[in-house]
Amino acid sequence: SLGAIRNDSLIYEMGLEIARQCKIMGIQVNLAPVADVNVNPANPIIGVRSFGEDPSNVARKASAYVRGLREGGVMAVGK
Image 1: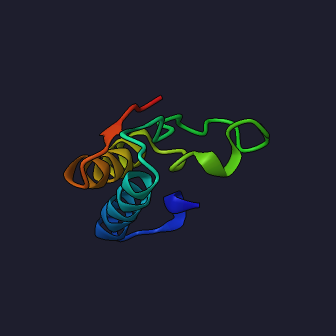
Image 2: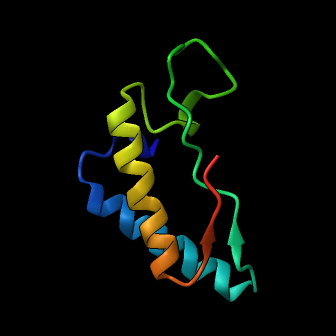
């Protein structure tokens, strides 16, 4: 899960790479990232899709991912 990555610049780089791959396929909008806060680790729906259980951490990491997508030329839709 990207939530386990401590260096937010790596999450930004992941956003850039995802944007690069999206553009190759002609995709201009990515319905990501998931910005759910994992308040119940036993919830199988959120699971590893979440950046974690701390709201500040989730916001920071989701922002880094969005920044990478945006700077890569792909629109992000946080959810």
